[in-house]
Image (tube, rainbow, N blue to C red):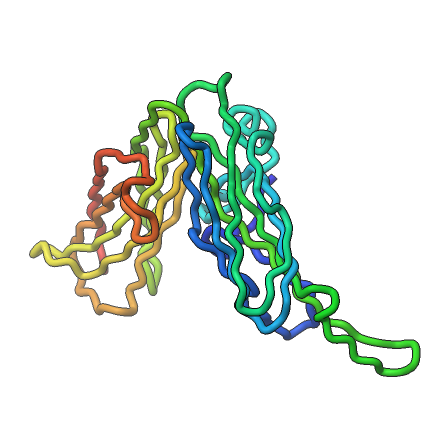
Length: 281
């Protein structure tokens, strides 16, 4: 089953009146958790940003970032064969599993994965689903009459990936195909990718457009997490820089680097580049 990815690394569920938008209720750090078979332990810090006491609970659900038919990002789950191979849902625990957070308070949640003795070396994963809502005693209740009342309650569900490294792990990336499509206001790039090794590819892609003199005219960087063979759509907006007619070189550079994750946590791979010529005008 596929689900729309509402924001990078998280989905959001709200129960609220139409037209009301709520800020995030709790902050979660780090945004990715990495465990190894040496210790099998990690932690997540959850902080209450609101002036209300929050009820927080943690659950785990196997899922991975995939794509729709047009290369858009989708969260995919409930694929039994893949879950049997890569999921740690049965081995992972959180302590505490549920708790109350006072306004401005924080809680460290310990995450532990029991050893995967029967599994081959590789990277396994799940997603930690953090649900938060105002504690029952803190929810405003406004009486409209003796028997009628209204209540607004926000229920947020955020999720972050949890990776478990067992034994010797390695990764890499193959660029199988690149297609470009010119729009009036942007260049759309479709890239078919295949990870190699026994770990997902976790890094970033830099997209650069060079003119005939080799000067970089446009440049974009975004995260690239590839679990299985995928089609990914990238876009370069053309409204920022006026482009003359001519032939340009579009360069893709994939690296196992991210600004939000230490290099020591990422499974490293050799950078991969690809260049395609495009005609503008």
